[in-house]
Length: 553
Image 1 (cartoon, rainbow, N blue to C red):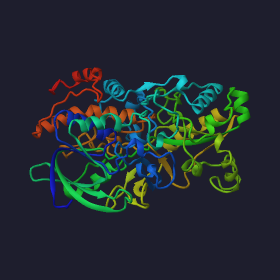
Image 2 (cartoon, one colour; image 1 turned 45 degrees about the vertical axis):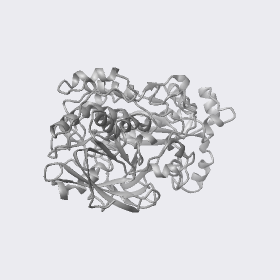
Image 3 (cartoon, helix red, strand yellow; image 1 turned 90 degrees about the horizontal axis):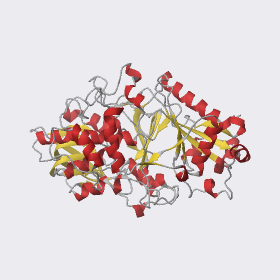
Image 4 (cartoon, helix red, strand yellow; image 1 turned 180 degrees about the vertical axis):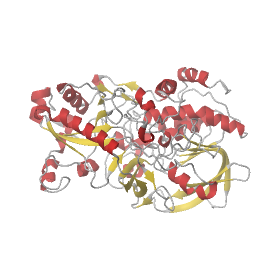
């Protein structure tokens, strides 16, 4: 397509993860013409390969951006992070919404609390069939973590997940995309429902910047990315829209907006600031299998239940003892067992009590021989929103280093004493639980190679009441740029101490009525009130009283 060709649509959605898919569905169902531009490929279930080799489907579906002190792993495909997430869907604890963080006062908008968000959480539970797993659904690794917690005097609980366990084959390849329709990726609910209502989804379309038209609409400029080598461009184009919904992810949305300053004018101060890695931390426990049998009464029998790469699940059990609102900020966190495949995990795991280098060398080689007895514990703590994005690269969200997946970004993250305190406390508790009575030896993943790391980037374009410390108002609209809304993880004000997908999705659902109102005020014939993607209406009835100004009920 020629860069001089200008198309028109009512609503242009940038990204197709939770924030983009939910917006696309509701606005298309309400009658708007909706176009979705997605940077990554459109992978169907048959495309997901059960391996982690370079050049296979998972390298196409992931975006791994190395920054200065923080690396971000995110989705890069139609469906975004929902295609590669582990489908854990807890609600954020009540205390999260009262967090003060680095600004010293409540950082969430006054209009958003656990009480006001609960009806929208309900709607997501209905739309994505979120259920709490039973102990019979728990993997061996999850059961081992629960037993270790019990042995150390802690509690543990099965996670709420967006998984149809009747379809789950325990293949343990969830992170590389679900081949069996068990995981509630957005590619099996919101996105097909949006397409059924006329939305157009265009993969391999990377948005570069936005400009304003003479009549106050927006002109979105994009490049078409090669389907095998993401460093190559095969064309470009322009689409004009009355409403733009930014949902490119917390590592890309602020970069696009930063690059758009030259054509849109100044961005709010908070664009590209206050980034949070959800306070995330990883520890590796190297189990003593004899002690597992003696202390916990557990055995893997022939070893396949836990050792085999192809058998098991992602996270199934978490310990929430420290999710206590009476505790001081930066000392609250959750601890979650997860399966992390060989590769990055084996590289970054340190050697407990090493006499030499902790992440390579002879001692590392010895513990690698025992990888079948490794258990990974994932901590989600409270950080200080200390991440800042530097000037944007020439194109994209990062300077792409390899054909797929790997890039070098401009994010700089220097952890504060508060963040380091949260990491240290969670590390100490994992060590106390897993090393009790010689059950295992524990070390956190090293930060020496890539700094901190997160799979749940948040807050780089966050909502709030204070214009100086928030880029969005409490309706997710970009300050001083009417008609631009942000609905992805970058809108979440700070770390949540739990997996954030449920909260990102609920906030996106909550933003839709305001986006519909803005579209109507700009002449788009659109209504609000669509059911869940499968036609269920209970959640719809719960939220409609919250939006009395809208029609379409």
